[in-house]
Amino acid sequence: MNTPFLGPRIVFVTFLTLVGAFGLNLSAGQFFSPLHETYDWSLTTLSLAVSLNMLTWGIFQPIIGRMIDRFGPKPVIAGSAALMGVAFLLCSTITQIWQFFVYYGILTAVGFAGCGSMANSVLVSRWYVQKRAIMLARSSMGMNIGQLLLLPLTGILVAYSNFRIAFVVLGLIMLLIIVPAVLLGTKNRPQLIGQTPDGDPASTVTPLRSAPLSEAIRSREFWLASLAFVTCGYSLYMVTIHLPKFAADLGGGLALGGRLLGISAAASAVSMWITGQFSKTYGKRTLLIWLYTIRAAALAWLAVSTNIWQLYVFAILYGISSMPIIPLVTGIISDRFGANALGSILGSTWLLHQIFAAVGVFLGGYLRAVTGSYTLPFWTGAIVLIMGTLLTAALHEPPIREQTKTQVAH
Image (cartoon, rainbow, N blue to C red):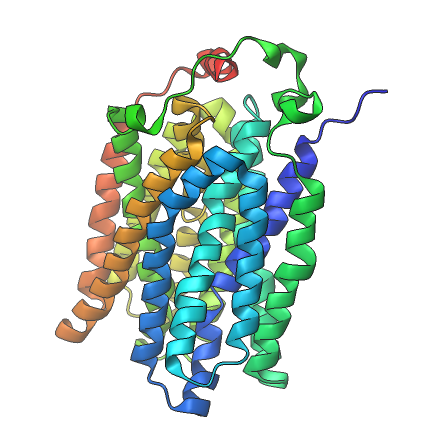
């Protein structure tokens, strides 16, 4: 009797992994107030730990990518999720600021590098070719659901127990749910169990050679896609970190920033599903052009906003155009260069993304301090996103009817 195709289970497990990975890594802000109240650590110092986390995550992306190419995504994702879980358990014991920098700023970031978007995208890309864009979008919805589920859970745990209990619960979620799901529910590639990508026997066509990293970095398409993607990183983290403060500047309450980010996450989940369905009809490049354009318009709108109601409009537009960019860029790169060295190639792209993310966070705070307003930082976000639109427009993507043949060859 034929074994059912494992691909849908792979997509579910990667979705679940991203729920945990993004939920934990983005929860740091929930701990700022209790850590400040308990130890009198300044918000500036705590924010530096977040910056360290982002840079460490970016630096380790190429390293993790090479490990995935050599050992396969399954052991790397499982080990990295375990490291995140252990790091959060260690965070429950902190009494000195250096411990928070090491446990969250470094260990959590290294773990996140290995069980975040890049690693799970490689795993899904090995199991799907013709349906790759759709399945990457479904898997990537875990990034949004992680924010919607685990960030409120963290807030409740902090409010009704204490920050140490919150760290323990989040750590155990990774260790007792995510790690076993990856170990028991995934395989590195379909060929290991006698299956083929998409579960389609037609995929047994003799595959063409996938491009190595050395070839990819000499490619015009790699640099166009990667440099457009860095504008995503620059604007994504500028908004995530600074929107709550901007909301407070306009007279909103302390909870408004979290509410706005929650609305964005919900809008992003819907957009992720829709773009995944439409990618095969309209092409990833066309959808990316629209998403970069919408986000540029949203940042421009934010730059001129003076009322609270305008922030809700921004949250919806920004959410529509935020996370869906990630699986589309991943899909374009994997379609172009194949899956064999995809970890190394995507790792390099994500390193650039995170460097510019750190720049965006820093400039957002610096320009706010110098000018007394977020107007200039948000305008810079709009401008770089326009550049991302133009770079994406210069990409070459085969006509839709030709893509199936091209993708199956990979």
